[in-house]
Structures are given as C-alpha cells and as structure tokens.
Length: 142
Length: 142
DNA sequence: CAACAGTTTAGAATAGTTATAATGTAGTTT
DNA sequence: AAACTACATTATAACTATTCTAAACTGTTG
Ligand SMILES: [Mn+2]
Ligand SMILES: [Mn+2]
Ligand SMILES: [Zn+2]
Ligand SMILES: [Zn+2]
Image (cartoon, rainbow over all chains, first blue to last red; front, top):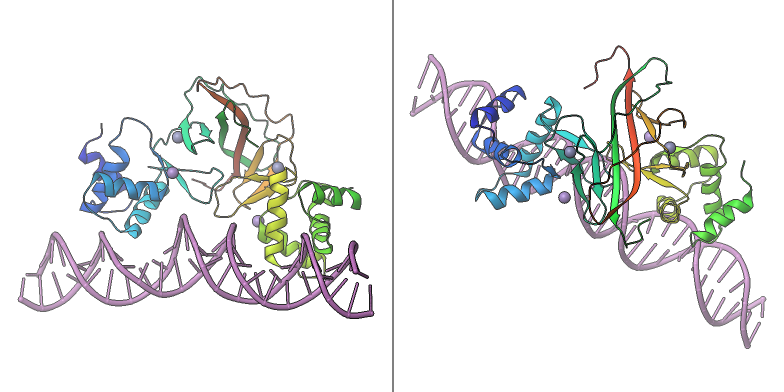
C-alpha cells in the first residue's frame, strides 16, 4: 500500500506539483492491491464515486498523460475507440475477456519467454506484447 | 492476383451487391502482391490516387466494415486513435515500426508457436496475437 | 496587500466514425 | 416504354473521445 510521499514523488518526477486534485487522482490510481486497467471515463467515474469531489476531465487527462509519459502508467492498445491505461508498468501480457471487455494481467507462468528472430535491419526491438482474447465456452465469437 | 469474380464473391458473401464503386474498393484492397495494412483515410487516399473517381467516405466505411464482419479483413489494434485494417486474414503477428508507424507482417519463422496456460475457468482462447514494437537503433524511444 | 506563477476548470474545437435522409440507378413488371 | 421497386450512393449531420483555450482561482512571495 503506497504512502502519500510516493504519490508526491510520482507527481514531481512527472513535472507536476502535488496539488490536492492530483493527489486524489493518485489515490484512486495507486492505492490498490491489484492492477487497475482503466479508460479515462472509468477513472473519472471512480473519482466521483470514491471521493465526494469532482475533478475536471481536463485535469484527469493532463495527469494521466503526464504519468504515462514518465512511465508511471502504461497505455494498452486493445480493439476499441477508447484508450486503456494500466497501473502495472512491468513488462507483462494480457488476457482480454471479450464478454466483459475486461483486461486481465497474465501471470508469469502463463506464457514462456518469447524469442523473436529480428529480420529488420537497423531496427531494434523495443517491446514484445501478447494479447490473448478469450470468451465464454458456449458463445460463438467471431 | 485475384480476379473480378473473386471480388464479386467477397462482396456477395458480405451481403453487398457488386456495384461499380464497391468493385473499385476491392481492386485497391485486394489486387496486390503484399499485405495491405491501412486506415480508412489511407484507403480513401489510395482510391482517389489510383482511380480518377471519388467514392464517398460513407461507402468506404460501409464496405470495409462489411468485409471485416464477414472476415475478409482483419482489424488490428495498435496504439492509435485510428482503426487499422489488414488484408492478411490468416493468424499472424506484427512488427510495428515506431519511426514510421508502419505495420509489418511477421513471417512464420519469426516467432515460434506460443503456448498459453489458460487459467481462466469457463473461458476459451479465441486468439493470441503478438505486437513487436521496433525503432531505429540510435534513437531513444520510450 | 499586490504581484505573480502555476493550476483548475468549463466549455470550445477537433477529428474519426456512424447515422440519416434525399437522390440516383438499374433492373422488373405492366 | 413508363411506372414500379429495391437497393446504392452521397452529402451532410450527429456523435464521442480527446485536446485546446482562455478565464477564474490558489497559494506564495515581497
Ligand atoms: Mn472500461
Ligand atoms: Mn497510415
Ligand atoms: Zn496489465
Ligand atoms: Zn498483418
């Protein structure tokens, strides 16, 4: 469970001063046991539910993007018109439950290390990410 | 190199009649040696460049989505606000060149088969897709 | 207190996408 | 052929996630 000083560090390192609103955002983002996978509207909803304060969408967007640029959040690309973010910034893979559209972190033992034969000259591998789409047994998904 | 009758089959199987405009779209999409990875605006630009005819965006969107729903095109999720589509509908993985934002199909020998230990009860794996981000050697990418 | 620097905010602007509704087209029936 | 019919095409409006903007606000310093 992270402390307030950690939030302040995260904000400062992202070039943001630790204001009241931003600390509230940190609380909702990082005061958690498990990874939080969210869209901006998920986050905004969480903020207005957990706190009785409203924070402007602009502030939420700004803070999330500052965190993402500094590496305190990861952006995840799934088939959607909305951006997803992830509080788990370690290298990891995902299940996507197509029934609920929920993202789930893969444990380390789900996939063995992937070897890539890089046949692109002059290009270096920056990341290797796997997305495993799952759905209910019975349902016929495309 | 596909024939006109193949285009007609693709259209008919997607529930669309083979009209002049739709056949033009098929030509730009499928009369190719290599895979075509594109956004709707890429496709629209290609159409107006290769043909001297203008086709309404609405028709392009409708046709692409009908093809996608029937499985004649695949939608690819990369970190972007735009949808990407792929004329290669076989199961395959991608490189994403972060310098140019270009998608490149992985050859079969780039990645060995991935074994997933599915620990989600009641859920079946629908697909496993890998995205390998690459960038120039020198450049410092995040 | 006044000046100032940075923050928050509501709302405007933007852009990709989807929906709508009027018009066009091409066969079919009479 | 004229009228009829069904679908296609199109311009444009509507929608929505995101970004931008500019004004109000806050807290600090002299
Ligand atoms: Mn969500
Ligand atoms: Mn493109
Ligand atoms: Zn995750
Ligand atoms: Zn591909």
